[in-house]
Image (cartoon, rainbow, N blue to C red; front, side, top):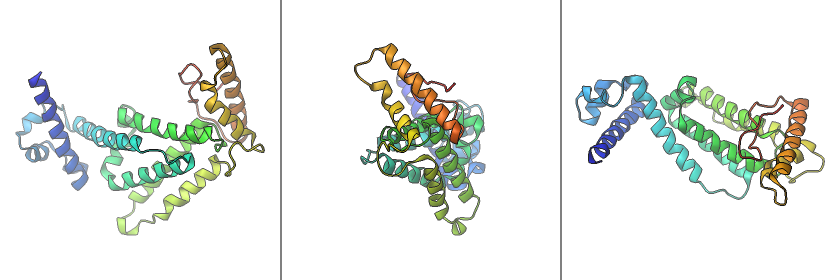
Amino acid sequence: MVESASRHETRAHIVECAAQLLGEQGAGAVTTRAVAQAAGMQAPTIYRFFEDKDALLDAVAEHVFATYVTEKARVEDAGDPVADLRAGWDTHIGFGLANAALFGLLIDPRRGALSPATAAGMEVLRGRVHRVAAAGRLRVPEPRAVELIHAAGTGAVLALLASPPEHRDLTLTDAMYDAVTRAILTDAPALPTDDTTAAAVAFRAVAPELPGLSDGERALLCEWLDRITARLGRMGQRVGSDGPASCDGSTREYG
């Protein structure tokens, strides 16, 4: 047990040293020799924990992003789901600009698809979008909103990182957010009676928790609402393939 704990501490120390090099000097600086020197050990020791540089970079990306996602998930809601959505956007943009080298690793499809931290980050976003939907402020199905926000946020960060810091126009992120929210949000009134899509999406968001229904009735209601939101979504914008939580707790696909 002691040996296992010591091994875990050594691995964590290596990852932290590599993360510091990555943040200060970029991915090119994360060599076995440099990391070993920073960690105060011989280079061969690194290979006892990581088979190559890519494996080490994967661990660094997971470590830094997992810490960020954990802190992001702990932030208390302000009570206004739309304000919380904007706060999450600003935090994500800030993280990307402050961690340029790491952000490049995180958006690598090969790495991102395998990252539990990346998946956890998407769950935080889905949760915030779900609360907006439950408040009657979403005019598109939840999966579509998540896809649009994620794509816009990633694109905004990449566009800014492509320019030297002194030439970056940070108003780009505000303009991008405004464009996305115009496409996905209704105006201020909750559950607007003149917006059928918003009402359907909001009802679908709370359907899994409705009391007084059997599991079968709740599942049937969710199926009907899935069909409605999918149809309304196709009339305006194409709906994503991953649906909101179903009434049995799994993920439902739109048909």
